[in-house]
Length: 430
Ligand code: AOS
Ligand code: ZN
Ligand code: ZN
Ligand code: ZN
Image: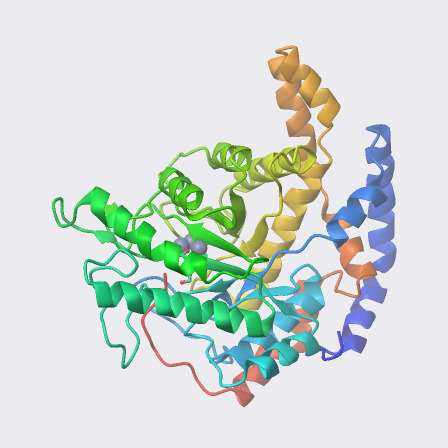
């Protein structure tokens, strides 16, 4: 990283003050794991190579659907968002990717934008298109749908926008397009459930045709909202059917907040992997719906179980295993930099804990139908406190052992509040 927003001396000073305590905790955990036959350094190395992308829109206080309460110093353009992403990666060292959103992140010169990101040690991850809201000056409204619209010109406009996102993505070094559409209905009978899916497929296949050979297209399903009676791509079944029809480069994206209550998301992950269609994730947490709360803040066990399936998939790649990991969270009550750092740590921690499950013991217990032993094998890993491993990984990569302490003492947000223009009170984002 060449361009670091937080003083490297401040990070070094804080790390020096807590390094002895960390070493003590790391060594103690190492001995404990050693007794379980686990080499702590191997887990640490896995954590060091793990990455999850940050959404450009998550650097702002998106808020709920009803109100936005901006934070002083919040970013208002992609340049400021990149700077905040650089802080997140500098301190946490696990978020080198930024997933941009168009047209929210539009600029004149994408080559320069890519260089700007690279100078922070960042790269661009999947590009996200937006046909779920109208933009100023747009010729055709998406009020009654985009890729599935009954109006041909509207469908074409949505196709063109997605193709444009691919073109921008090529310039900024992205290798994937994420497509989430809000298309759906609020009334029974409003649209034909079959024909709207057909129209979506025909339009999405035109987007797919514009995909470079080394790209993937990810379809993000969502049960409801903004449509409250039916959504065109409402669930993993619709997503899988669409991905299978569109082609090999088309995969499914799982946003943890986009399912019916109590759905077994880890099993969906296993099924999509079985079909060779597990494209990626939007990590967040939810209690009621698409709450977009911080990852693992409500149901950390579910996140662990998702990672348990991911480790199984990694060990049995079958038709391939290369999912994109992204965070998709946004709310009103914290500094988004702190929330993103907290989520990235939680996600990496679930990965570490899933990686230390005794797989041989688990598989043997499963095959022998020893229910309690199988359960306890998972539980032992889940209950392991991996925070010393995460902190040691950060320290070795040049990040902050105590990222919250360093971030707060840097007064970064206060400085930005002086430098940046105030955020407008726009509508919330979904
Ligand atoms: C919407 O609910 C989805 O989660 C999308 O990923 C969306 O594009 C993102 O939240 C930005 O608004
Ligand atoms: Zn999402
Ligand atoms: Zn969502
Ligand atoms: Zn969400």
